[in-house]
Amino acid sequence: MTATATLLAMTAWCDGEAESASRFAELAGEHDEESRELVTHLLRLEAGAHQGWLPREQVEALLEYARRARRGDLVLRMRVITGSRSGGGRHRRED
Image (cartoon, rainbow, N blue to C red; front, side, top):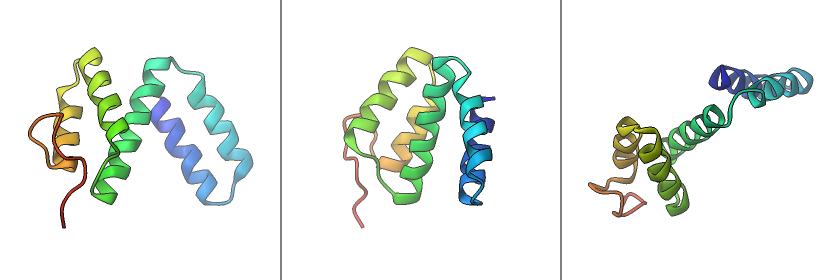
């Protein structure tokens, strides 16, 4: 629900519907902290995939979250984006 509400808030904002965006953002905030943290990491991963890199602090936060939540899939996605084989590799792709 957090991810859906966040996506709807972003869509409403992009469509110029500030009031709807605010309501959806409030709905997203009503869910537990773990759900909000997961959505934050997923959004960062998608932004990183689009840009081709992730800032070091985002990589470290993602690795910590993935360990706690036992989400190896997130680590694999991050490694594809950063081009690293381990969590300590480079964080920007070389073009």
